[in-house]
Length: 442
Image (cartoon, rainbow, N blue to C red; front, side, top):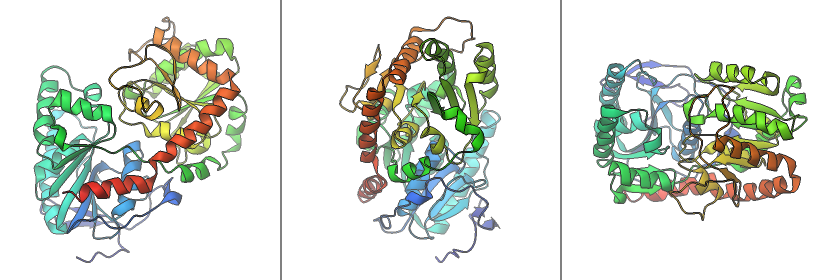
């Protein structure tokens, strides 16, 4: 099959026929395009494909960019996507839109209808592109990949599923059994951390023989270059003194309100400290209100979505991750690549495997822990709180660990050096080689 490389993304109907082609361009500059490395085509007969729900900015989409540019060498290799609008990064292969809405959905019926439509269109698209193996990212695309049939299926899991599952009661029971049934039909289930893989086996009944762990990649050299790019004049003064930064969607998972509350205790020792929050999301109003009610609005700046967040992270004193759950947090890797020491909640899963790789899994620290590559603090409780409620113990531990690093230049320098050493273990070439070796077994 010959694909015209000068033409833009393809959109398919239910029969796999093209209904729209867009002119190339219009997407944001890919933050990591300078670090693009390719390791050759996938070592399997027939066409390989990737599947995701959208191409907007996010940690999973950045990993998808790495993966697609790593081995979708030919334009004949499709990158299927529910909604192909507004790509945030560079992607390899040919982007093929399925013309299906991406989440969030307006209720369960709308979600089921979107997934059913995606199944029909993906089945047709796999036939059209003669796909031999399809690799999907995230829960919805994973279900669609396996249930559509027509190819070998590899599903990837980017979070600690038990903690991150949004459903409760009967819906949770149904979702758990659906994941067990569907994931055990996949040819392979790739998970981004050992603890998340154990969770799938122990709590969802996914057979251990199906599971493989491939950690998220990080292009430290490219990030280092981007971290040195200038920032706008209006931001210069903000980073002159001690500055804490955090990054991620403004949603429940990321727990930014715990850091805002802890800032009041941090300022008792470091009164001139500032907090920069990168990201957008549904919690913006709540976080801004909490900053105002705590009398700290002038010490907290919401920077929104930034095409190049690394130039802000690289100018900060510390990176703090107050997440309630993760998979294997790319933002921690990226902060370390910027040469910034990190403090993280010891949430399930990922931070412990990144910062304390030899520590036992399945247990969380109960006090501040100065791990080999960063600082871990006890998991946060995830309860929404007002500004006048007393700090919880974990919030106090978070504040005290942050103060210790802000006040100890030698300790920061030690973590800066060790963090850079650690993050280089997750290079793009190694990541693509691990995927190539896995696919060669299918």
